Image (cartoon, rainbow, N blue to C red):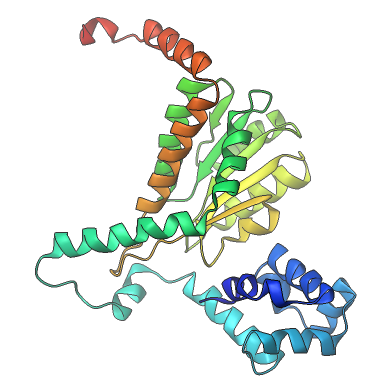
Length: 281
């Protein structure tokens, strides 16, 4: 269990001051905890001894041990397939069955990582036609965001899948309004350009940023109003996107049901304009 999960586990037993500290740490996790203890004390208006007592409740032997664990989590979040392969054992015979079994367990973890309340909030924002929706992902995960965008465009208007070229991002930033949302997907070996984009969207345009990431948390999380931290470890050299795809498909279905009559009419009009409709017939 990482420190972020541990903080959540002990939240019920914390004092009011400790809950304030926990909120500050989680709001900018893990970076807030990498500050010197005096800096953290000044920012949170909580004394250094109180911070130390809180750290000890997490099983850490002092603030330095706490920071070592945070740094370890950061390093784990940057591991390549080559580094992951060194830590895994081959599945062996019956590879497909073994892999699918591990995938099934991973999918079960998604419902624990994302609460029903959070899922409903994100879907409500995505379905709100007063808001434009902007989508972008990392080197690999952008294919999942493109998939989400293709479906959302059939459900509602004002959905924009941003291209990977940062040179054209200013055009999209200039379109964004304060009520709009930017949904981003970024898994470990994070793309630093996306963190800068998230910062500009939140700071300069006032848009809400939603990030779909992993348990180590993309740096985008510091700018996000909603952080959906998914399990991705497959037990092989390669992280799995199956949880992300399942979450996106659930979003597509749920958003389409928010106003099914409007969705049905739009799909009907969409199909009527398809250029290849004669080929389908």
